Amino acid sequence: MDTSKLSNPIVRSAFEAWQKGDSPLWLSHFTKDAQLLDDGRPRDFQKFSTRAIGTERFTSVDIVKDSGRSVYGKFHSDTWGNFKTYFKFHIDANNKIYKLEIGQADY
Image 1 (cartoon, rainbow, N blue to C red):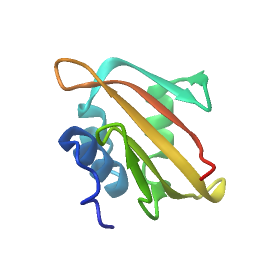
Image 2: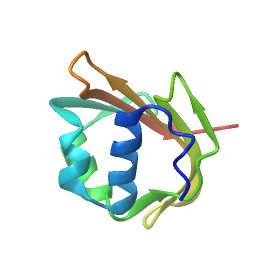
Image 3: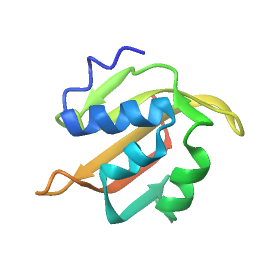
Image 4: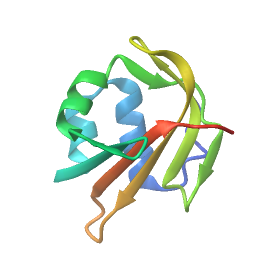
């Protein structure tokens, strides 16, 4: 997959780890108390990361916004099928992701 649209290096590295199913590398980009919001509802970030990584992935990157911190694209989940989604990464002063917002996208 072409990740050249991902202009934020932290987001790009985390995104590529997600795509590869590399859980340790993915988690290394986040704070220990990272928050996850799924369509605005809080979820357990650690459970999401360990259950979804390797079985869910982007199949295209269609839109990148917010200085490269918001990624919209087509997504495949072995459980839920295919749909459009977004991942919005919130990065702290130490270049760690402290919050990830995910959800279905309509664009």
